[in-house]
Image (cartoon, rainbow, N blue to C red; front, side, top):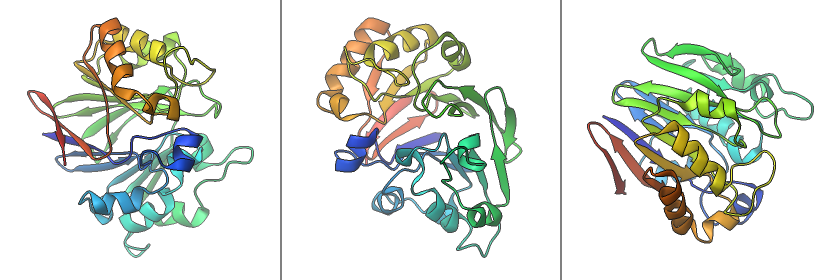
Length: 262
């Protein structure tokens, strides 16, 4: 059974600055796999509050080089490697995260050196994590042009994660086949801007991908003011059950997908 913990459900610069929601990303646990996705500010502290042990993490995934997605990555790499004493684990990231582009240098050379495996990924890449879990790297259209999402095949089905992106035809195609679709929703209804997902965009994506369940996270301030209403509108307009995640929410995925509060 897969367990997905929403360590933090806020996103975008102002939700992050004011910490209206935590910004620690997502933790995916399945048999033999513990993966932290986009560990933004406060991820480490929030993990301990939720009873998660960062020293047991196997994979840190950073979709792009914006602070609300990466700022706790280095300390979580230190936790994963027991302060660099145990060279283990995997760091997966976009080109801006791993190699740095322009002014982006989010992960130090030191932290990349103490991890057992570092993978710089681009859309279309496909490989196995821990020789078992297939991950497909998906495209995004964001202001960091190297941004990526993923489709991860777990024992109980495929979990897809969009990261920050606006909608485009390739995004729909890339996430087809997802049982659980996790969408970064920074913009509300009637609030569309370039490089970000709005509620209208999310409804279109969900309607075309047809997951069993869609979850909204990494929500901007204007979404958080009425997140449940936004999710209900998306459900009505996509025909697919859609919920707005909350901090500490756990999703259990087996024969059924169940939502629980810690």
